[in-house]
Length: 305
Image 1 (spheres, rainbow, N blue to C red):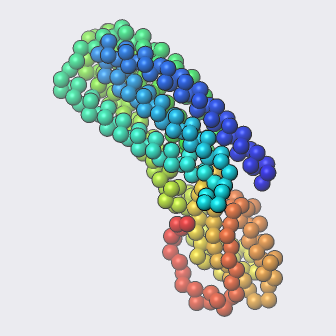
Image 2: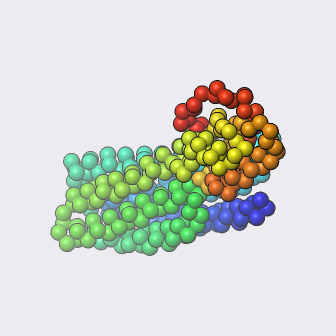
């Protein structure tokens, strides 16, 4: 457990450091992109600048959540502050969806009322933005892959990266052909690409906040397999499986023990099985006698904590 705590501590420090660099780079370039978008008249640049503005706020939220989550547990929050990162990921997912809606609305307006776009400054700023976004994305992508908070921040930056690519392509088309609709059309394409990832992030973080069972575990599996693996256990019921964070799962259950079996040994065996087979190192187990559950009704697949 001390090793896990030490690993978690260093992972938290690494996440904070990566997020701080991402905030500095993203926030700094955002100003240049706003100016460039206004001067060139490019929606793709302005949309990307707007996205970078919310990115800076999202990255700041992610940094704050990473910092808060390292606080130790206390009397009011016995599980600590780990869920703050999930909450930040959920907020970032909703923010991304809102950005997508805004970009789509603005793109439709541009298609209905075309605006002249200056291709040269648009191309220069978009190319510089691509470099910045690649650096920031590389910094975040190399971080903790199981951390939804980092994933949410990286998705914001990925959206910026795609926006920069779209702006470069649009600028090249405008310079070569003068066809202005390419700017809002590519903005819409990027928005739809962002929407898919944003919905996945929002769904995953919302599932954890609702204490849903992790994908690799469910109550029905535990109810069936624990009695199959342990002779001392005749029945498992009232099973609830949920996640504190994507990599930390918890379980509570009632286990009926066969008459004459050593209850303490059975408890140790159940805990060992949960850790070794399912990776559940935090379990609340209530032991019962066989006659207490002989008529226990079969439970459904519910698994809220």
